[in-house]
Structures are given as structure tokens and as C-alpha cells.
Image (cartoon, one colour):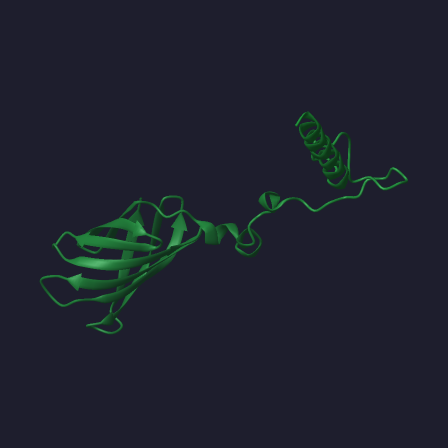
Length: 160
């Protein structure tokens, strides 16, 4: 019985040594640099996936990566609205006459465009485009309507 146990231990020991020789570094890691050639020079490797910069940073200018504000105050003549950020570039506007609009905001460091589509109100439902220039936390320009009166225009201003 002792002979069988001794033989089993010897087989386990021999197989462990053989496996360790087949798998360098498997018995505690590697000491020194492993990417050297025989001449001693090092081979350069590519950086890991986490070190690369996202592709969109190369294709988008800083103007296109603006963070949109959570609230925008829009004034159009005697009407004013508070726009609340819904996510992405979508906003919901509540007007001082209790009307509600869905807005799509596009903003760069020098310009601002808002697409408006009324969803409820006491009068006609409007479709309006606001476009203008931006300076810091303010913007102003001209609005143009497409519905219910095509081509109506006027000034607007916004702040946040």
C-alpha cells in the first residue's frame, strides 16, 4: 500500500514538473521582460484597448460636443417658455399661456437652433424654427413659422 502511495506521489510530482515546463510562468509568474529578442532589443506593442481615444473625438469638433443645459428660458415677443431637458437634445416647453411644445435643441459654441412643435394650447398649434447666434449662456435670432402661418417671422432670445 505504501508502495502504491509513493508511486502515485511520484507520478503527480513528475506531471507537475512537466506541466510547469510546458507552460512558462505558470508557477508564479515571469521574472523580467518577456518581449525581448535574443539581441536584447525590445519589441514595441500596441496600447491596450482602454488607452485609445474614442473615434468620435477625432471626427467631431468641440462645437458639436456641447453639453445642453437642463433649463432654457425662451422669449418670443410677449410669450415666454421654460424648456426642460428630457434627454439627448429633446426638451418640453411650457409657455406662459399654458401651451406645451416639444423642442429639439442644437447648440454649438457660436450658434443655437430650436425646432418647435406644439402639442397642446388654447389656440392654433405652431411649428416654428428658431435660429440665431450664441454668446456664453445667451442666444438670440429670428424665428420662422411653417404652420399655421407659413413665413411669419420675429425676434427671439434665450438664456440658461
